[in-house]
Image 1 (tube, rainbow, N blue to C red):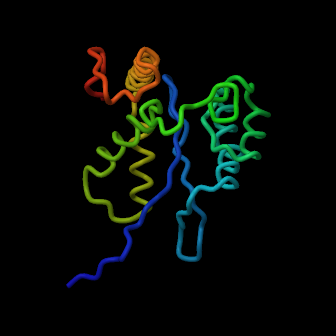
Image 2: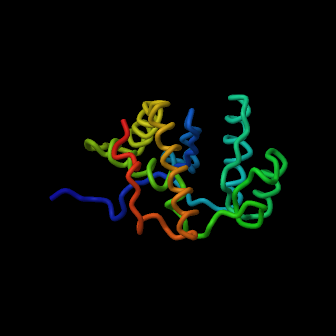
Image 3: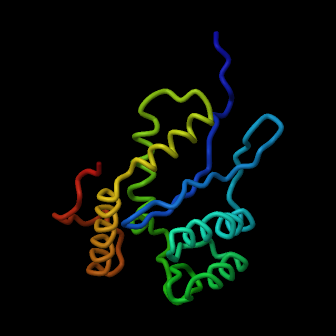
Length: 181
């Protein structure tokens, strides 16, 4: 017999993407006495991610790009400070993000599934290896792939607009990309 842990080890990771680059990955964790400890995302941790990691990473690239935030007041205030109010896509901002709309978010409709396929292509010994694979596989995504993902997102936006805001899984479009490299 081989003892197995009751719950598998996991990581909570955040990424953002554009047609030219990926920002992240950023892991939600703290260092405990026995190593990294994954924690859930709350308004304080999300605000910290934005303030201490995302905004500096975007500033280092010489660009500013609105990210859909959680709607906690400190997070909204921080985003509003660094981005123009009309460039933020979120509830309670001029451009509202439709509720329950993962088919509009490239991270939801492409990145996480892609990473799951490539990261779990072989056995993973521990959390450090899992995080290293996530980082490596994210950095291996080409600009051409990102451009294709963003073009596909634009097609999704158009399709949803043409069909009164309905979710895209009910419709087919001939120009949908079939694979990404």
